[in-house]
Length: 225
Image (cartoon, rainbow, N blue to C red; front, side, top):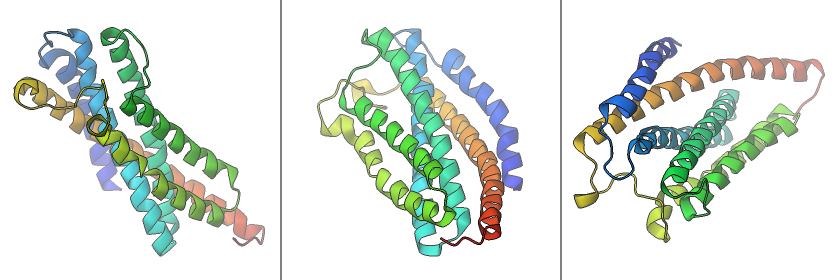
């Protein structure tokens, strides 16, 4: 996996660039002050959570059509990384909300749906742990992963479909981001994506080993799914 060496090599300086862009390069927002700098981390981690869950969807469909274990392993790895990035999204959003709204949490549509998504993919991981037979586990997880993705468009468009106090990510006209803020957001998103891809690749390598050991143990016991 040569690409993994490349992304791993870029992820470290990319992470430095992310924090430089968010906390040094980006100008201070006029009304929210320095707490607005969490916006760059918040959006970058949310985007990569979407990306990881899209991989879970794609892997689930690929497994159901091809029955190749590698797709199941990829889906499981992507779900773990996606949960990690969703956690970062929720934490950074809560810190921002406390400073701006005066509350750590409010049950407005996007926050509620994001929290539900987090629970759904934790449920995906728990489901995988609760089924011993690899073939049954893979089929069940694939179907679950496909169905769980239905919640992602709801999260993304919730601020447009329902009354919400959650701000839009990037506005237009008077609400448009300052050019330097857009640049900082782009840097943060690219850096976070490099990190997510690296973590996914590393977890995938481990998942392949675990899957092969699991399949070997199943065959050794004379079991079939």
